[in-house]
Length: 52
Image (cartoon, rainbow, N blue to C red):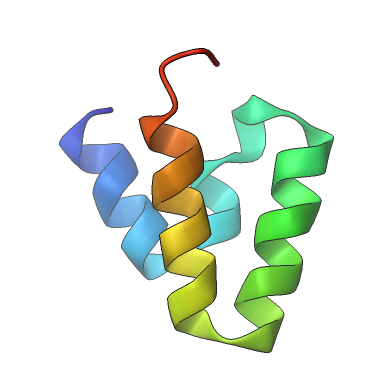
């Protein structure tokens, strides 16, 4: 997880997880629509996952 990804997750969460798969993108997009903070938290959780 590099600093560019973290900044992108804070500014526009769905764009930061676009290479993690369609499911991750859709989930983070829905969370961002519901509220910016849940989208940021979800994106950071997905980016911090070492298995993907």
